[in-house]
Image 1 (cartoon, helix red, strand yellow):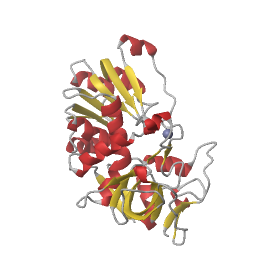
Image 2: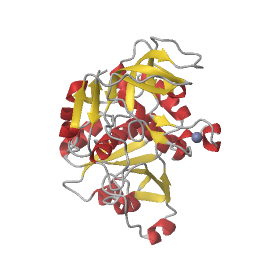
Image 3: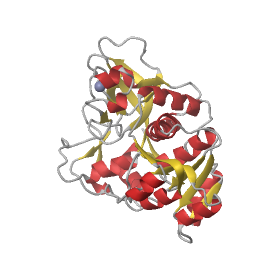
Image 4: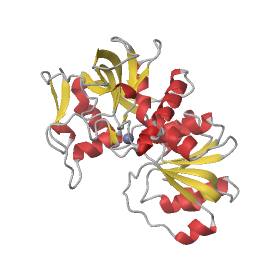
Length: 343
Ligand code: ZN
């Protein structure tokens, strides 16, 4: 089969599309999917570059997100048929531990992300557990389904399930372009919140407004946490979505209202941030971390995508063979919306 192989960690040039990679066989409880669309995530860049101590068997196939057709059923799979259109839940869990049994698959003791710790979706075929499948309605494109899966389920779990966002609350999204941030803007609007966005330039701010944000703050021209203070009549916002981390956490602590929540699902600027604890207790701030989503949140948010209530912006599509070019486009971090490989 065609597949994009990473033979050693490093730059985008290390991604090589081959034509003769072995087609994987589904085991018990698994299905083989003919991938039609595979979306890129920033996670793919981190895995591609590697980190000290990474022990990933190489060559490796990247990619967490995919939609496609069921190609073959492994032994014991019921309720699915060859040819059905599906989208894949990128959270890989054991299905047996106490967290999985209580529907909290993203807390699984053996939790993995497709393409990070297991073979991923930049390929013509992939084998996944039947538990990771969701039926894709006939009218819905593979491309938007794949583009939505990881980032919309992650943002939904953080904002709605963990963050408890309520109608009428205010939300600040720190960063306008990344996949989870654009998903957070749409989900917060859908939930009935007033949405403020901090963007790195006027273009990003304009795109966030076009996506539904109520107020944009261009951090190239003003101190964004002071701007939030001004725009909210010195009150601050109820919820801050901060996936930047090291560079922004102090600003988020300043921008959040008394009793507010700061939601963290990532740390694009680095993992170690300093927290002035005096702000934390005197403002009664709650910091809520989460990663990925349980399957129930994946199903909820994908159904909203199928209904057109949430729609991931697509920045570009590339054929599978041009995965390296797609990576080069994503790498500088100035793309608004998702990049998808069509297979
Ligand atoms: Zn488990």
